[in-house]
Length: 80
Image (tube, rainbow, N blue to C red; front, top):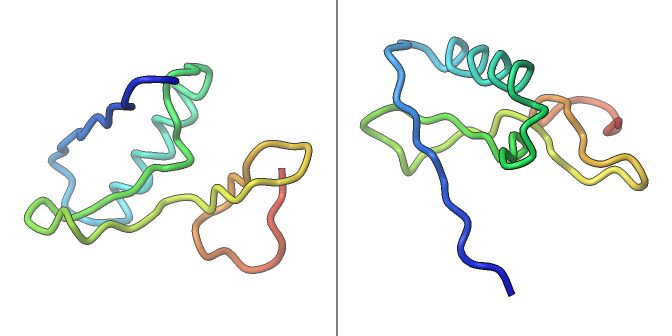
């Protein structure tokens, strides 16, 4: 049995969803090697509407290859 997992909410000064998604991608590229981080569950929201989140990546499980790294709601099949 494991304890509860924790979420880090990281406010930014960015003013658009596209900028926030781009920053999430940069963080994933630079910190993807850190096992304690689960970038597949990344979502973004406006500061005053945090209950309305937009998923960044698909994150569907790909048999024998981990999780799909493509954008959420991508066209075509998932890939490793």
